[in-house]
Length: 153
Ligand SMILES: *[C@@H]1O[C@H](CO)[C@@H](O)[C@H](O)[C@H]1NC(C)=O
Image (tube, rainbow, N blue to C red; front, side):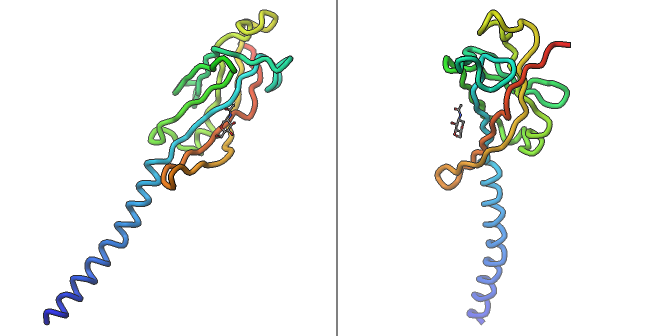
């Protein structure tokens, strides 16, 4: 009798614990999936690489989604490089790639007086891969497809 009870308890625990373990690891990978956007802004209207490879330092880079709402922003460093980390609870990777653009709001004339003072550089986003850190933290690496000048209308 005692043996039957022990077996019953053992089976119950296994039945309850197995799906729980699965749910927990699913929860962890969901919670720790970060989205990182990085890239270089060049001092140029029509290509990624400007004349002489000139970069655009101290440029305000905004992530705009839907109807042009700025949902995150950062500034390029002295080498024109920027990076932003998104809260994975607020962004779905799929909608980020279809609904959002990076927009450089600092006028191009700031980095080169011969370039327009009105209008912005704009780029859609693409996923280039995932980085797994420590076997647990998943980072989706997202980069601009290429900044193009969009005149103010
Ligand atoms: C952006 O991140 C990717 C992946 O980590 C890296 O290979 C690339 O060099 C970075 N780009 C810049 C401009 O920092």
